[in-house]
Length: 561
Image (cartoon, rainbow, N blue to C red; front, side, top):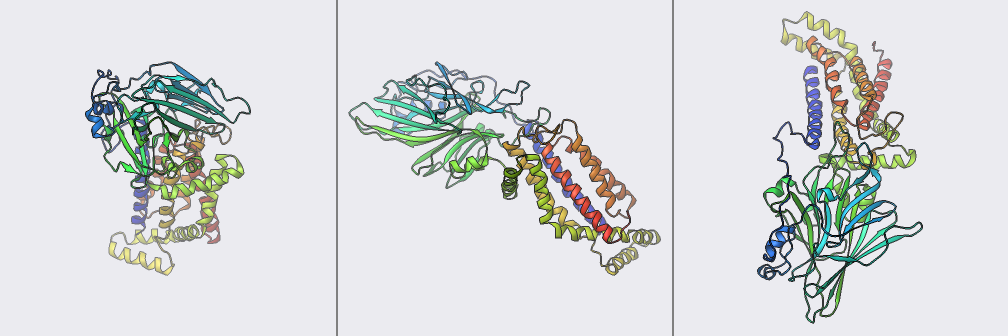
């Protein structure tokens, strides 16, 4: 029974580490151990199609579906061409306390955002770019449904002069206006507020004709299919990267780039609420509308290009000679869970915790509360482990007591096995008699280890996903808890602590299995050399507290080491 117990535990633990290793490989861009490597996106950008194509084709090429059958059947005089990687038009740069944002006069689109308080992983430690011109990653908007109306490729004029958020000023406004097109004039106003990554965007449509019209406003995000790696240069860490859609009927839905290579998103597209986003490791860009109302969602690959879009269509009817206004939020920034949860229902789900979300989310909540007190994420991890050990103290004590009793009777078991080695049936009966006589449960130490594995994996995802850990220092040489220990001090200490734990546990009666018990910590410690320092710190702290508790119980029971 003891042999089976140990084998099962090591298989479970081994598979857990193997799956974590495989996740790192896939997020790094390497092929999975269990599936072939995904195809890389094309390196070239298709040329724009000729003008004058039907609206349905033009809409497909820009990621905006045709607004109606009538519109699709009518040739558009100003059909929208496929986007090119380098945006045309004049560029305007504005700077706030948090971002440096670049706009293009072509459609008044936001084509680049640099986060001034988050550095990239290049040697120069430049500001982190979320939207980026070099990747064709941009936030775009425009009108469809009426022939010739302004789109995100329509030239627009900047009519405001503000370019920098002044000291003490609460906000900065940027206003773009189009020339009348299709009888409509489109005005875009971006409002940056101090201390916020959420940009207020107002679209105003002025109807200069004498007939009511019913265009649709589209809000979309465009980007290429690269992973945009961030993290350790040797062992990058990535969660889900790609388009996401959220509304009340499908909740949070992630859409893989490889799926869009085959066909456009064909899930439930119409709803009364929801938002769209492009998610990457640690950061997100999203179009948010919190007010209820009709909307249609779309996501697809732009035909003949390496670009993908996700967005939503919103009705914006305008009376003859009148105007209509739509207010939305454009968030471009880090996945700070508290902030995301306040912006829109479900928006905090872009922070990817994997399959252990139900454990990881409260773990991060507790970790965040601890950090509010100690102001250091490393010490917060140590305190979190201490609290978990207190919570499981009784359960662990029972398990360690069982292990101590097993270690105490181990000499009797070894002597009996040697004496009855040629009588396996009698050996098994005698072993069970000893267990019963000494009131020892050979499976008594299984449960605590099995319980810790989900917490281990959940905290792995917390550290993997939390931008708060990115570039967060602990002490001395640990300057980034989301990256591996540069001097391997923590992995070495973890290996030594694991070996000490093996020494404190009862040795398996089988000599071969006893050797394996000593080899396994050495074999798996290799993986920990590449894990984030925060995760290794968690496991090391857990080991040390476990060792202290086991040592104390062994002393109480008079077990000799």
